[in-house]
Amino acid sequence: MGSKKHIDVGDVKIGGGSFVSLQSMTNTKTANIAETVDQIKSLEECGCDIVRIAVPDMVSADAISEIKKQINIPLIADIHFDYKLAIRAAEAGADKLRINPGNIGDANCIRFVADICKKKDIPIRIGVNSGSMSAKIIERHGGITAEAMYESAMENITLLNAWDFDDICISVKASSVPLTIEAYRLLNERTDYPLHLGVTEAGTEYMGIVKSAIGIGSLLADGIGDTMRVSLTAPVENEIAAGLAILRSLGLRSGYELISCPTCGRCKIDLITLANEVERRLATMGTNITVAVMGCAVNGPGEASRADYGIAGGDAAGVIFSKGKVLKTAPMERLVEELFIAIENDC
Image 1 (cartoon, rainbow, N blue to C red):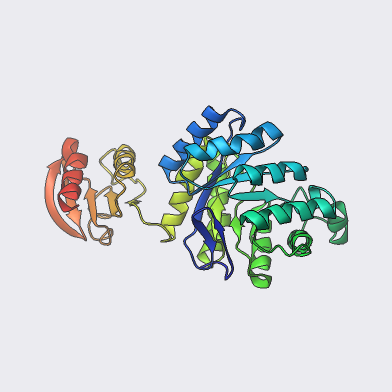
Image 2 (image 1 turned 45 degrees about the horizontal axis):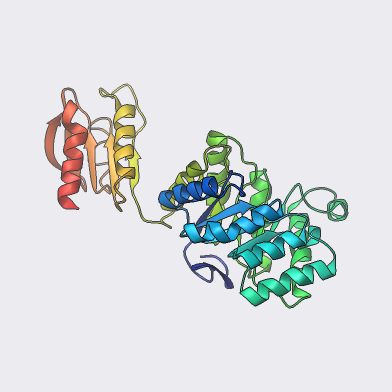
């Protein structure tokens, strides 16, 4: 899975065959240290591996040292347009910078950033977005294309390589899922740099999860990608929940998997409520387990035989089963409770 090269972001390895790490970004004012730390701790609890913060000014850059003292996961400083912010963030203890070398200043400015990052062993993510490429590249390719995004990434890599800096990760995000997939595939074919996956400006929670699952999931299924962020117009914690679900669905993270059938005219129970309750309780357990919630005998123990445990509804009672074998029956009002008694006895 992923690239041959790797970078170290704090104590998290990206690339080189390591696990796919999960990222999010705070939406607090970074200079408000207390609020920023509180949000990062919330993300940590949800399963975030690496967090990114906006650094729009020197006050925010200076806040990094204090924020770092109070959190447990690596911190990335997101920098635009000002090389001095990148230098200050590196000096303050950022574990990684996210920049576009082409927009932070002239060659000397890029050299200063490369030098401080080499001195402190800080990697850089080159973040190319479809809407932030140079007009020359867009004109040369006749528009915003995957080849244009690839060229933009390589142009920025060349700027850093000129100062003997190659501790690099790349992202090439677009709001278009097909364009995003095509651009990442080009990078995967032509470079060995670690790739940060994402669909930028993916939208509100519903559409953003759909687009991210298709875009990020398609690439991960092909063995492309080393770290990722699900970008949502939603609470940041929801990005981590969605990212974990994508990784679990591809077998790239342990944790629970819920199998549930769609409702139909044969269903005699409130399957939607049951499935939601089972999923809510599974999410609090942190257990590597597959559980099925099935509506009737037709889609019951047999069809869900790969599930470690499951329930199937009936008229007045349902069944608890494991690996396709019925363990016991239970009244409908006790079905979920009896399911978790069976799971907890096994765990």
